[in-house]
Each structure stands twice: as C-alpha cells, then as structure tokens.
Image 1 (cartoon, rainbow, N blue to C red):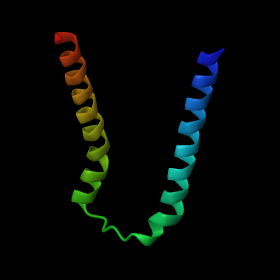
Image 2: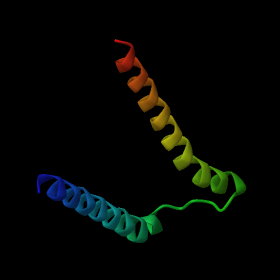
Image 3: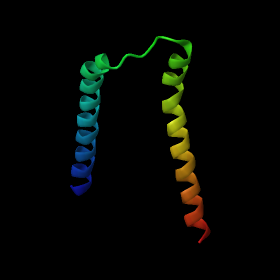
Length: 69
C-alpha cells in the first residue's frame, strides 16, 4: 500500500509542477520579449535534450563509481 501512495504522490507532484509551469509560461511569457531568430529557435529546441543527456551521463558515472567500490 505504501508503494501505491508513493506513486500517487509522485504523480500529483509532477501534475502540480506541470500546471505551475504552464501558468508561468502562459502569463509570464508575455512579459519576456524574445526575438524570433533562428538561433533562439535552435536553442529552444536543443537545450532540454542536452540537459537531460548531461543528467543521464552524470547519473551513469555516479552509478559506475558506486559499483567500483
């Protein structure tokens, strides 16, 4: 039963964070003027996958270090 409540809590946290980000983007995004250039489009598309890749590489390195000990 504890496993189910942990999963439900995690899903609720993700949903609330998603809702919060959506509201910030919808209403706060109008306050930030970003020029529609090719560079900004490329950065907007590539930053998130790069951050995820860096996080996964760091996680893999930490996992490998813990297995060596």
